[in-house]
Structure formats: structure tokens, C-alpha cells
Image (tube, rainbow, N blue to C red; front, side, top):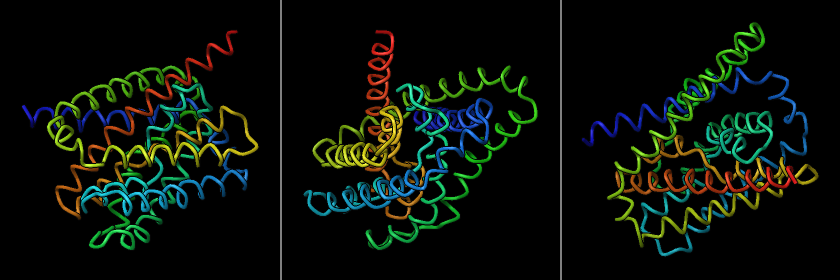
Length: 283
């Protein structure tokens, strides 16, 4: 049964990521994705929020909280890896700008590939970080499907409009299956982690990301600030897990717990924000 759940979780999350990225490309133009990145202030503040403020707070939390090495490493890893494929989903739930979410996501993914190999070994003794190991999953499963979708949208807009709904449904189904299977697969580890401080450490990273991301949207609309806040709070768990595998099974388990907590909390938060904004607009 455990092997079946593992396969379902892996296939579900992979489907969510690949279909979601392709669907975004089919629904957007390249100019919509790049438009937000033309603002130098937005780029600089976003980079500061995600690669200075959040990592610094995560490292500080790992040093101050009474955690063991595995939990401390997991907190640092989620703090240092940004650019999660969940951001466009969170933006959709919160009624945010999809173009902004994709542009920021790609920016953070690319910078994480260069940032993590330099900073993580300095913050965690014994961590081995391969730039290619991190980059290949981002390129193959995220950036490539997004690029293909953008090309199809550019060359065959009618065909793109006709199939984008199917990709969106596949992505949503994959996410649901992946999360449910992941919870069923790791519920023992989740309960065993209660009292280990990983939940508080993850909460600190989430709050740091929400605050820093919101401030990075200085001068922009509240909708953009919400997207940037959610983007800084939702860390790149895929990259964190790649690095965690070099630190032992305990670190992997703690990172997996954070991997489940982060999206569940932020999906609920984004959904609530979206309902509130929809109600306000209707009123």
C-alpha cells in the first residue's frame, strides 16, 4: 500500500506541476509574463525579500529555537529555496494577477539555482548542493512546459484556448491526489514530528515570507502585494528536498513535513483572501 501511495503522490504532484506550467503558458503571452519584471524596483525588492529577509529569519529561527540538527536544517532549507510552482495556483485562488505570479515564480526559480549552492553550505555544515540537481527539475518539469505553452499560445492561439481547460483540470486533480496521498503516506511522520518545533519553524518562515513579500510590493496594488506575499511565503520544496537528501533521512522527513504544511496553510489563506476580495468587488 505504501508503494502505491508513493507512486500516486509522485505522479499527482508531477502532473500538477507539468500540466499547471503548460496550462499557464497556454493562457498567457510572453509579454504578460515579462511585464512585471520590467520594474527594477519590483525585481530588487522581490529578490531582497526572498533571498535576504526570509533566509536570514529562517537561519535565525534555526539557531534560536531548541531544535535538533535535522529540524534546524529543514527550516534553513525551506527558507533558502524560493520560487515554488504553487504560486500561480495561490494567485488564482486569491484573485491575483497570473502574469505577475508566473514572472515572479520564474525569477525566483532561476535565482534559487545560483543562490542555494552558495548559501546553504555556509548555513548548514555537511550540506552538499549540486547546481545541476536543482536546475534540472526546474528546467524539465517547470520552465520547459511553460515555454512550450507560451509558444503554442503565440503560434496557435485558438488551439491553446481550446485545450487550456483540460490542462487546468489535470493540474487541479493532480494536486488533490498528490496532497491526499502525501498526507496518507507521511501521517506517522507528521504525528511523530509534533513537539519537534518544525511546525513553529515553518510558521515563522511563512510569516516572514508574507510580511517581506507584502513590503516588496511597495507602491503597487493590494492584489499585487498579496501575490508577492504568497510567493515569498511559499518556498521551493522541490529544491529543498534535493538538498535534504544529502543530510540524512531525519532532515528529509522534517522537510517533508514542512512541504505538506506550507501549501495547505497557504492554499487555505489564499482561498479566504479570494473569497473576501470577490465579496468586496461584488459589493
